[in-house]
Amino acid sequence: MSVDKKSELKIRAIENGTVIDHITANKSLHILKILGLPDSETKNVTVAMNVSSKEIGRKDIVKIENRELNHEELDQIALIAPKASINIIRDYKPVKKDKIILPDTVTGIIKCTNSKCITNYANEPITPKFNVINNHPPVVRCHYCEKLIKTEDIEKQFE
Ligand SMILES: [Zn+2]
Image 1 (tube, rainbow, N blue to C red):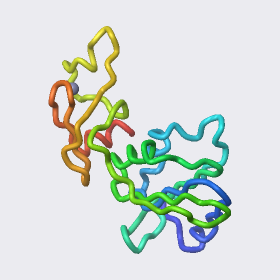
Image 2: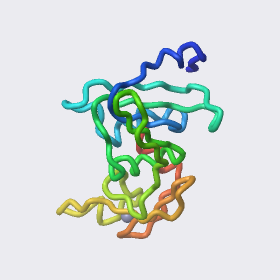
Image 3: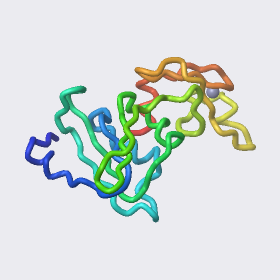
């Protein structure tokens, strides 16, 4: 799927909300899954996929109207879109632009790939927790069993 320049121009500017730009091409739906969007209070979510970008070749863009996502929510998406940036829009103007930064630990977004890990077999559910080993590409290590989860294993969980 590709979108030409004309289509890119058709992406409507939003009055208020959050724009997530420079998402790795074709990963925007994974991002929405991580953010749990759209939900009942967030009605207008616009996704542009595989548009051309001077900086990263091809990219996706997500626009979320009337909602300002915070860093805690957004930094988690660095797991699958390490080059993403955030724009907070108020009255059609970007008031804040930021790179997202993968936090030192990631909790509950992905599962440990070790079937014998306590997070996978315990009767009492334990939320998976990972220490970030590398930001780009993202590599994490399970806090409980120390299994290394590589980038491709992270991406597989969102397919
Ligand atoms: Zn584990």
